[in-house]
Length: 565
Image (cartoon, rainbow, N blue to C red; front, top):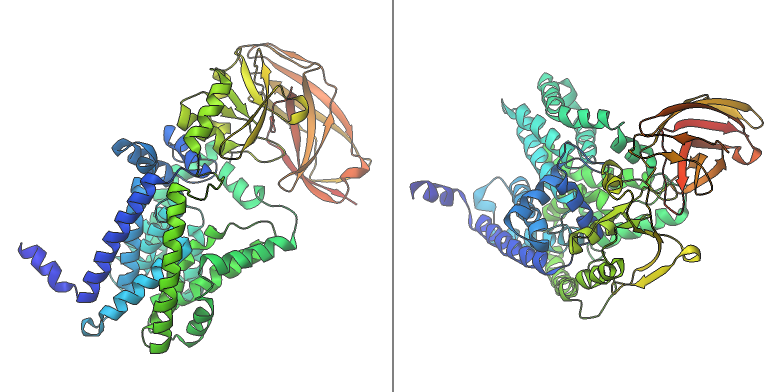
């Protein structure tokens, strides 16, 4: 009782208002989590949770751990999302601690109401307050970093330990956490002169070693994908889309206020300075990134802390702006309530990935009639099918789209020799189904499915720079790890792939004939003359087995090369 009394004595009325509001928001998010259908990515992360590891193709492991823990406590969508709903009240409380005035007597109920309104009207926070995606872990770990940064900047003796732990926590949550650290160094370069900052970095590195070991064992798959695998050719529309998305997710009614507030706000300590610059650096960085391809709006979510700080700091001392925020915010809240009702119950009958899941995948299961399904590119919907029906499914990495976590899961090997349905295009399909959620699928049946995805090809002979007309003599060793023989022929061919960007590729038939017995390796030499149509691009070049109508990916580690014009 005495301890509770002491804690209560340290809290002002404004603190208690914020805490009460956070508990209400938590309750609302729990209800939303329970009644809203799973998005595609959330179902995909259940695949992570089925196979706990120190890393995954797309993301580090915190998301998988939270999904796994939630499913221990509850079933359905609430179980998957349970621990994600708990994160938002915690990181908003940390932000409140950082932005409220240090003088207790100056904290007012109006401050608390302003903080509540600003937080509640950011669409980004509304969405990522309950769905099970890596952005929630990134937010809580970034908040921990901000808190540790604040303590470190004030010279607290052991703050470097918290700083190092927070850096590791961010790294295990989402790779974008590296930007938070980078931007803190840009705004506070004095940290580089502090020996304890390097101790923090060493601690973070030590804690991150298990994930780095996983990356090493998997050919640095995540880093390669995020640094280059997502790149596409420049599209001006991607830049415009990014700018529009930023205006929407951060509330277009408040954007003009933010610009004015950013101009007028004068930080009084290092943490406030960092928070002030965080939105500029994040949004500017990804504006440049939009030149390389589409930027998802949630990639900038960590800058929300800076936006809320700047708005709060300015509006709390400008009465007219305060009144505008409260009135406009009320309108936004009403719209968000309607939006949340639509997400949970879909009274408008919208066809979208969070709606009609059980009905849709039950229809797909009835069509499958017990046969495993081999999806060609729907890496998340194949996970949805498994989650909602318990049926067997696999998604082949697709050279015309992308690879994903399924490449590290060998469910397709378990289907060898079985009758399966393979997702394909309309021209060769034997089955078609239109689901209640609006998705259309074309399928063809394979009586004796024999995957070739794990056949390994090692090769030499492609230099890093090439010229059109140059003749290549490529030596390769092909190894069959399967328990059955694999032969080239009319239905299975060994092809050479030249891939650029994310979706574009050219392929050439090698005309190599071979039969590989189980466990056998054979050597072959392929002579290839670089054609003119390859001129002027950078490529990932390599080889793949193309079997029937199945999607396929490289059966090797492709090499980077450029063909001169």
